[in-house]
Length: 537
Image (cartoon, rainbow, N blue to C red; front, side, top):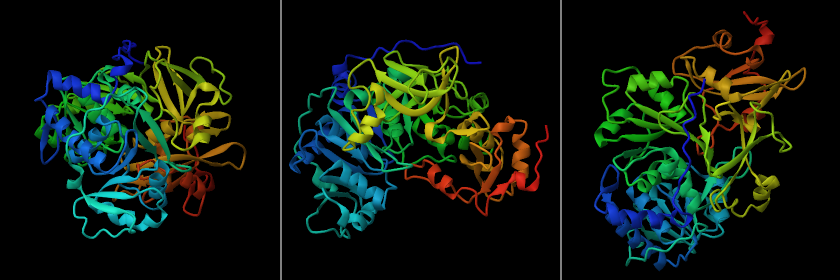
């Protein structure tokens, strides 16, 4: 049973004020000397962050980067990354954040597709760039953070040091809602990554505290997701800056360090992926589990053990959101209203429909693809960069097609069912891979899993579970099916199970289900029917 709908109307500022310059103009007027951001080495007030960013903006101008021109950033989580992003945003240039795991052809595709001439990169990643240098079509200037002495690139690419980025301050630009703030590449699980053209109004609406209910001015956000990801840069960092709060940017998430980091930096608010929350919950209980200042968490998706998690760790309010880089935040449950499996309630400034494969509305309570459009202009994606066919396909019938299957409860809350391309049809029933995966992950010996459809020898699909066991565990197919029997209906029980050392993933840690489907049923796959396994009801 969902909690009653607690979904106040969205009251964002006027469209003209939904941009980075407006956020910092307000900050300089009301709290210039408040800490804006810190990392492990240093911290900056709002005034200092603006001043340093505008000096870097002057450096980009000296490199010949013009208004609304793209610049690539391949940087780790630290203040220099924050300054580079703010520098580009305040001066009306376009950030192209690059996943720090990218290499090879996917790396070359992003660099070429965006068309940027200038790139800022950590020295540690230069060897990967050198490997693809002969494939690059646009890059002419590389700015290296760290020791660039060993960097060897073709002669037409000049190499500069990070210090060369600082120059005489550039002016803070007056920004329009339609000005691009970034081109954010979504990792391709079945094809080339697509660059989402993000406007200032779109980015603001994705992460504004007005949407989520946090952060508030007295909050300190703990940012552990990578800054090349919208969850780190927008829902973590930009959310704090819009709210007049502070942000602590750390290199990475660590389940063993998480609560100690919250204590050390006095953090009160954070965003966790559901998998991160699960890792925390599966750590051995400790006497100081609730000894920390963190009270509010945005969790996406919400884990099944929500109540037990909150009780154990002393967290007072959990919220959630549902959306995408392309579609912004579509629905949300504000802190204190999130429920396991729930994806929140529709924003009042977004229109949505749940439809079948022909874009016809499905009956109430029936699952279908959610398609959306915004009531305000420039508030969801401007298209896929240099991919007009993909843009047209996504906007079929003038609605943006999210590719997500949801159903809506009588309370109005959305329940996420599956990704459209991951759905399974078995014996006349639609099976949510997400729901089956959730139950398998409840087994104490399971670290990761993925459900895929494989061809059936009867009709439609059969279900295969690809499972990674925790270190030292010996779980087998019989024991796993015995565990699932009381938890799942017969049509959702996997016929096939394959235990794997690791699941194939994209550089953004999304499971490559296309690769798993390609391997199909093979010599390593356990088939419950081949051994006569009986469903013991």
